[in-house]
Image 1 (cartoon, helix red, strand yellow):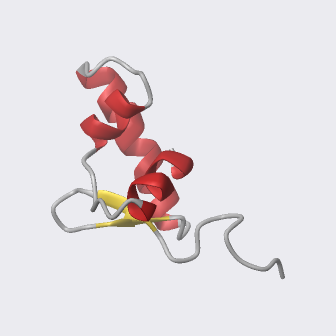
Image 2 (image 1 turned 180 degrees about the vertical axis):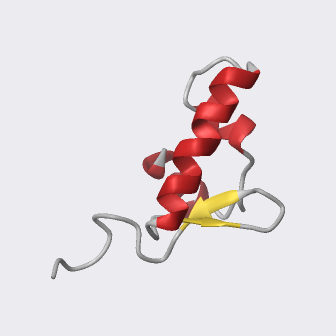
Length: 71
């Protein structure tokens, strides 16, 4: 998920909805799969790996895990 969103950012594409993330990851766009992706994306946003827009869209955060120096 992080790799796909990082690639989108590097090509100049903006935030994406959970349904689009699911499709990009090769999952079916069923409510169960999309909700699973949304749940994981929210957890990553809470940990600082993703940014969650108020509209419910996600993008890679500035401090994505593995992106910066380790402490």
